Image (cartoon, rainbow, N blue to C red; front, side, top):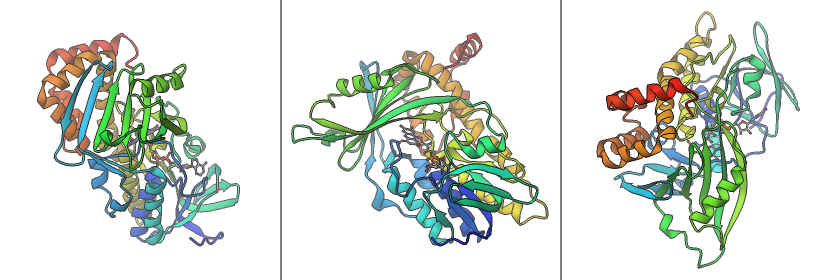
Length: 393
Ligand SMILES: Cc1cc2nc3c(=O)[nH]c(=O)nc-3n(C[C@H](O)[C@H](O)[C@H](O)COP(=O)(O)OP(=O)(O)OC[C@H]3O[C@@H](n4cnc5c(N)ncnc54)[C@H](O)[C@@H]3O)c2cc1C
C-alpha cells in the first residue's frame, strides 16, 4: 500500500465501501493507476445488516466464503406482528457478512490487482480543472485524471461537483445483539431472515443472523421520524431480545431512496453507490447497486480514458437504464406497499406467484418492472391514485 504523492493517478476513488472497492478492483484489472482515499482506518465498523442478496453475491468474482457469517434459506414475513408467513428457498437467499471484513476484503483484492490505498485520510473538497482533478485532504492534495465519489450518502464529492441536489432519504438504526448467557438462545434464527413490516411507520424491522450474534434494526422510508430509538427498543421487546441480550454499536444512518433520474457525472467526475443515491426504496438494499455501479463506472472510465476525448456521460445513461429505471419501478411498488401494506401483504401471501417473484428479484432473475407491469390492473389504478393524491411514502 505504498503511495507516490507526486503522481497523477488515472483515477482517485473517494471511499472504500463496496462501491469504491469494486470500482478500484475493476479499474486495476484494466491496468489503470488507482488511488483509494478512505477517511477511516480499515477495517472499520460500518452500520449495515450485511445482507448480500443472491444477485450481489453473483457479481463478486473473488471467493469470500471465509467471511460469510450465515446463509439464509428461510424468509419470515410478518405484518403488524400479527399475520405472518414463511418462504423456504433451495438456495441461500441472502448471504450474511460483517461489513468491516467484507469491505476490507474487496479493497485488499483491488490492492492485489495494483490499486493504492491511503486510509485515515479525509477528503474535504474536490477541484475539477480542465485537465485533471485535485482531491484536497487532511494529508495534502492528490491529483488524478478522473475522480470517483464512492463516499456514501453524504458524499463530499457529490457536493463539490454540484451533483445530486435533490435527494430522497430514508433512515435506519441498527444494533448488534449478543446473547449474555445460555438462556438467551439465538440458534432458532440460524439460516432465517426475519422481516417485520409496520413495526415502524412506512418501514420494517429485521433480524439477520450472524455467526455469534444477530444484526437487528428498523428502517423507515420517511425522511424524518421522531424517536427512532423507541421503535427499535419496542421491536427488540416484541422479539424477546431485550433481557439477557447486550446491544452494541447502536447507530442510525440515512439511506438514499433511489429511483430519480439525474446526472451522475461531470467531465472528470462521477458518483457510485450511495453517493449516487442508488439504494432500493422498498428494502434499503444498497450493496448490490454499489457493486454494480462500481463495475459500470470502471468500464465507462476505462473506455473514456483510452478514447481520443474524455466523456463520462455514458456512465449516467447506463446507470439510468440499468439501475435507476429498476429503482423507479421499486419506488412505485414502495408507494403501494407502504400506503396499503395489508393489500400487498395478502397478495404476497395468497398469490404464490407474487412471493416467488419477490424471491426472484432478490436472485436477480426478475425485475421490479416485470412485477409492476404484471400487477392486476386495479392495483395499477390504486397506485396511480396514491401517487397523484399526495406524497408516495
Ligand atoms: C442500518 C443499515 C442497514 C443496511 N443493511 C443493508 C443490507 O443488509 N444489505 C444491503 O445491500 N444494504 C444495506 N444497507 C445499505 C448499505 O449499507 C449501503 O447501501 C452501502 O453501504 C453503500 O455502499 P457505498 O460503498 O456506496 O458507501 P459506504 O458503504 O457508505 O462507504 C463509503 C465510504 O466512504 C468513506 N468516506 C465518506 N466520506 C469520506 C471522505 N470525505 N473522505 C474519505 N472517505 C470518506 C466512508 O468512511 C466509507 O468507508 C444498510 C444501510 C443501513 C444504514
